[in-house]
Image 1 (cartoon, rainbow, N blue to C red):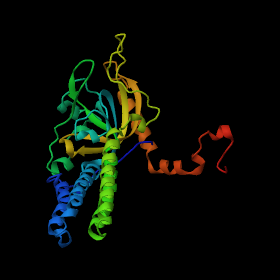
Image 2: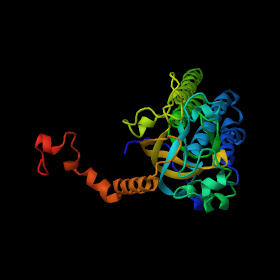
Image 3: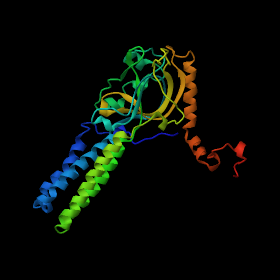
Image 4: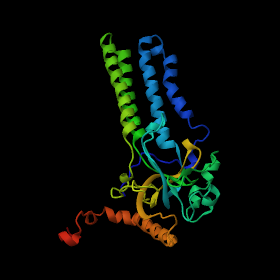
Length: 337
């Protein structure tokens, strides 16, 4: 499977839910506190601007690490779901500071629900209603499941959906830039403290400027490094909702099957979601009703994905004889090469 992933979810047993920003505050203030109590820095006011710069970088690193490694609460591994594409939330155009969240999000109406179905009805539906229902890891850590609603473009009807995201690299890029910046700033501080004036201060100034530029470059690159459905499936093509073409005809929304990690996003209390999407396929067009054989379609895709993602299948795919680009029937290659 082709997909991009920059986050990991945290198991409920090790999740810290009291205040998700505590670690950010502690780490960002740590450098400033050390500057106040350190005997080395006590009489070196000329070096304190570098300490302030390092504090900004440390705060950025802490925030990005929380975003990528501590924000998502695991709900039980990878899951398959089928749904009608109600709406799309692109990776760009978000307000600060959300503009570094460059994920590409989709919202799916789960079968056999009608447009506008409320949370209670969707949660009670089978076989995917449990994906949007409250789970023990959520309640045990003090969060409340509010659900996620999206509006169908054609009808204007709003209802409960399953939120799912292809991952963008915005926060990852910002994190990388901040790490480089912190390393350069550390060298700048060392130069200020231990290299004689004026050479030490000249080196400090150059390194401090480079550090700021690395931090800024990471922020700028991250702001434009967005996700795309093609990251998971380069042959997926254009996804569309119930949009109307210029000639007045409706294209109809795609019915999709998605596969990915089932999580609760603690930054947006509260809803469950598939994050990241590891597999996505177009399997039909919504004409206002679910296909009559939707149950058979669900079973077929669940079985196919389960087989494709099984450990035995993955190991077989790694073997050299299964790494061909042109089928062996055509090029004559076999197990022996």
